Image (cartoon, rainbow, N blue to C red; front, side, top):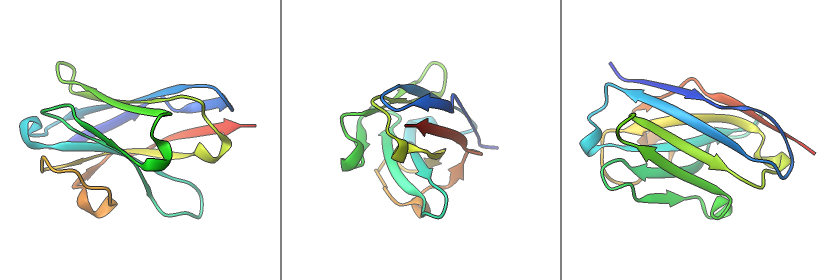
Length: 124
């Protein structure tokens, strides 16, 4: 049984930083890709970043490149999202996701498993 559990969300002022974690279990890590998405109220779920678990190679949404960094710790089966220079428009529920394929995918429908989400609120 696959489980993805996010943590690390919270309230931060604009310009600040937050780090999210996603503890994963039950995955075939050698052939999976994991990612972060976010969803603001009234908006569609938006791709943030993805990472090939085996190689550690990341891929980012163009609009977030340079501010957000995705990484993983294979020993802890945990994925991270470091968010810097946060803006009020980054406010959203952030979701961890996993897909049973080593290839990148930027659409939510490409992912097989989802965490429960963690709220990130950036105040101006």
